[in-house]
Amino acid sequence: MIFPLGYASIALLLTGASARPHSIFQELHVNGVSQGHVIGIRAPYYNYPTTNVSAKDIICNGVTHAWNLPLPDKVIPVPAGAQVTTEWHASIYGANDPKWANAEPIGADHRGPILAYLAKIPDALQENIEGLDWFKVYQEGFDNKEGLWATEKLMRDKGKVSFKIPECIEPGQYLLRAEIIALHGAGKLNGAQFFLSCAQLEIKGEGKVVPAAIAKFPGAYDATDRGIRVSIKSTGPNPTDLKYYPPGPPVFTCQSPNLPWDPTTVITNPGTIPKWEQCGGYGYTGDSACIAPAECVEINGYYHQCQ
Ligand SMILES: *[C@@H]1O[C@H](CO)[C@@H](O)[C@H](O)[C@H]1NC(C)=O
Image (cartoon, rainbow, N blue to C red; front, side, top):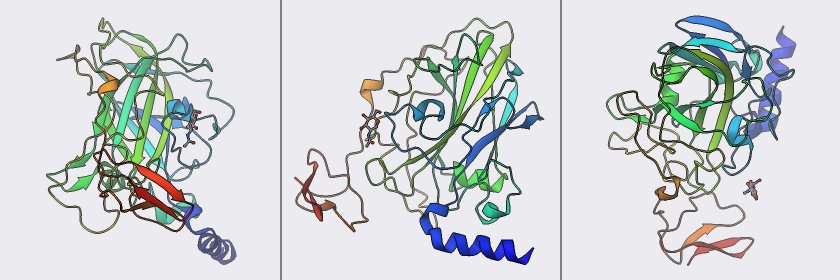
């Protein structure tokens, strides 16, 4: 087996950045029981990120980042109130793909938040997933106590992140949208990397609550949101005074189900680059967010300036 391993590492060297350690949500556990590998989950077959928050891939992937086919024909039964665990790996083939062994479950520099949303859908197997009303059931950004990003905890926990399905929501067919946002390149507009898949659920229970803080995808996220266009350090120790605000609506809870949310009130990152300084151009690798109200203007291919 020396040859294939050697070949793989040469391929890694040659492809450089394109062999970056990305991640795919590919398995769901319900109250600790695995529902099977890529069963009931519309997972992309390849781990490449989507970066355009206005494109349809931000719903559940599957457009430019094709789903692993055939589409799942299983709907996962979940009791309302259950603890679910999303499992992430760099390869669609799970934890043991040698090609991604040094990048499991995501590359160490791919720091950022992890979020999860639910949306009711007439039939969890239907192909059309546009226009759904999503509400957020989980988020973790940066933990100031532990000094860890959600992705760093994901690495520590071998690709698993758990949260509760609210016990008070109406029963029925749902999609669960689980998402990692990697922020190592997010100082630039459209530099944040979104990794996401949707699981097909049948939630069982007696709940009656319809959440008020609803998000549309696309629509919930703005490319300039302070949780999306934001400079973070991708290596070295995390600053303990770091303040990070994950994007999207507040997390729904049965205790306060009527929290409103208005996506037009998204808070934009005020930017870091002063007026008249460089914010882009060929070969430029720094941030692109100008201190408002200045905007990044393309003077020529080599030089963009905050004006
Ligand atoms: C993002 O997607 C939208 C909708 O498809 C498209 O109009 C826009 O040009 C895209 N933006 C970038 C930067 O690719």
